[in-house]
Length: 255
Image (cartoon, rainbow, N blue to C red):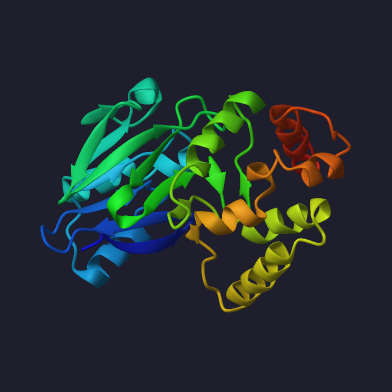
């Protein structure tokens, strides 16, 4: 039986996620932008929080961790490389680490770029990957600490996951990301269809995440920098993939 997933809107445009093992009752939250909505979702489902998983150190992902820990007694897990700038960790993780939530084993993936210590959490049996501000819906995070080469390598790790994997990212940036993508691939039918779907969801106030990885592979320009058509679109038909990725990211920064 796969883990149950609940998407929790927080702040102006952040998301936290709850995952629950119905057999053992264990429940984790991925990132804590604020406490109220997470406690509300836990109460609505009558779940008890056992674990807090942290993807990276930015305040809009960790500022509620200590309060939520105090109120629930949950264990806190995060990157060993970022332990000096995260809330106190009960379990420090690196890319070689794995841990269990209920009956399912999770794998830690090192995904630096947005920040140096950014990690993602992959639950292969449930086809879930929590990517926060690395691979995002229709985009990727800004390169605040890492290089384009670093982020490109991180995204290649995520792109290699099974295509049915649900990508659970950290923000409601999808519409803007796809508007930018359309400037590069105006005739991509999958992208045009996705834009219409996102517009319908946002009109209803529905989150546009999570998203199957296959849709990202078909529409997200940062996962498509290897394609000749994308290279031509940015005026770099003979460039290597990382150079094209860097140009796409630079254009988005000015979009």
